[in-house]
Image 1 (tube, rainbow, N blue to C red):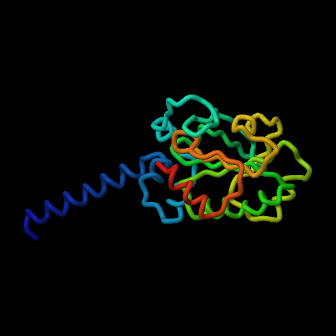
Image 2 (cartoon, rainbow, N blue to C red):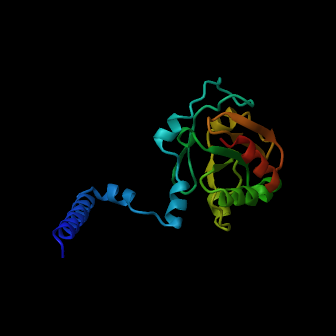
Image 3 (cartoon, rainbow, N blue to C red):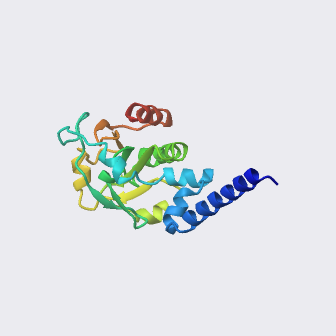
Amino acid sequence: MSVVLHRVLWAAALILLAGALAYFNLPVSDRAAAAPRTAEAAQEASAEAPSEASAERFVSSASYGFEVGEQLPDFTLTRTDGSVFTLSEYRGRVVILNLWATWCAPCVKELPYFDRLLREHPGEVEILAIHSDMISDDVAAFLADFDYRIGFAVDESGSVIASVNGSTMLPQTVVLNAYGEVTYNRVASVTYEMLEELLAAAAP
């Protein structure tokens, strides 16, 4: 083996050793971030709430309100599964709010459309179905018969429903763009095709 080749092999070995030492000295979280992701892991990550850095880029200067072009005031509700939904945490993503009730047949009929939209557009849209404060059934028990991925919450105080100009007239759908601005707010039933169009129109 020539002296030159010998030196090249030694240099390559040292570079590999230095890289390995640098990698295994990273914190576990940084090491995971540096590792390649599987397609499944990437999809799960995309379905999480946008990062703070992402959300900070989508700041609206619009006035607060529920009309198209206005930004909806921030709110927090506890989902039926115990997790917390805070509207402002989803800046950077389209948010759809669906006002419904167990006793509203048209509302129950369209819930699968919202669920399908979420399943077919992971990471693009966040959906929260908000039950009216007029409760005649155990909402969690009612939902136990279904395998919905969309979030559900009960607005016990009625304040969130009031903030979107809601009433006992149901169902009502509110669509917000990435800036939290209203692009659609109407009391009417929807179809899956309508939801896809509303999502496309509000997408960043």
